[in-house]
Length: 436
Image 1: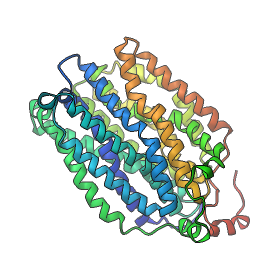
Image 2 (image 1 turned 135 degrees about the vertical axis):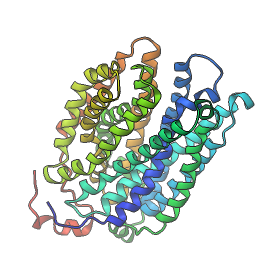
Image 3 (image 1 turned 180 degrees about the vertical axis):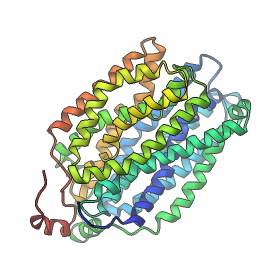
Image 4 (image 1 turned 90 degrees about the horizontal axis):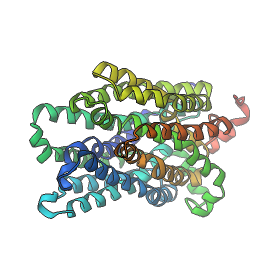
């Protein structure tokens, strides 16, 4: 492996903002069990969760637009500028949710405010993923990119852990009535303030060498759909390789707490603690797997994930539905998250390595956002729909089927580990033996 140093300042700058973005994104899901009743009339609890999950999914359908607009912006104005803009949008959307009126006071208008906030979040995250993935990949020398880019999911998971940790604190310091009434607003206020702080942090980041080099050489065609269509094979590859990974990821992260509570019958506090513990270990695994990919390549990890998710989802989810306590829930959740690590630790760098600099951010953003709108954002809704229809196990087979499709892609795609992202890397390509 290359002895090049990891640029920790760049990794920290990109990751900390990403953490706040995903804290706000995931806190909506983790606190839905408390605020669902605030925006919909009395009725079946599963139906209320189904409604909030539908609004959660709405944000994902905004991601393709965000991927296009902010991916284009990142390719034309720079990675730093895009990172600053996305965190600004996320701060505004979190604040909007924090002040949203309830059904009791204004009827369904409160739910409409939630929808608008989720649209803004979707727009922001649609560009954040690509800007962060592209920045982390370009700012790191070849041979360390897998390790450095894995911190994208470290930061994403850290954001979720902060949200879950705050939920645990509030559960133990506030009554259930207080949480349902106003306590759920607290994490959204925290998210809005934190995003404002990160805005100033990201302003001090340096632009990547690869982008500066491209900006000097050409100003035409950067970040355009026409240029992306010139790489349509890579764009379709991003959609296909994301399909199985994003469904599995959201199954074992955002949906897991509800599943353990709503199906297994665990107390909400126990289900939350299971998710927190499992996600903390999952977060620590990301750099290890990313560093491993720098040694053995990206494809072996992706293939391992594909096989594990295709074969293991049905028995794992079935077993999770019958767990009796914390220990069993944690052990089974960890098995699922270890499998998912084969995808999460390197998916960002793989996508960035597929495209040339002048269309890299858009090439990552738009296809990835489309895949998430179709599969990731709907995963929780599909799961609850199967449950509400009395055939919950159908969702397990759905996840396995998505993984099977992605596995075919992993088996046939090219290895990207040694891709040259800048002129300096291209100039030394012939002097470094290509590894297979």
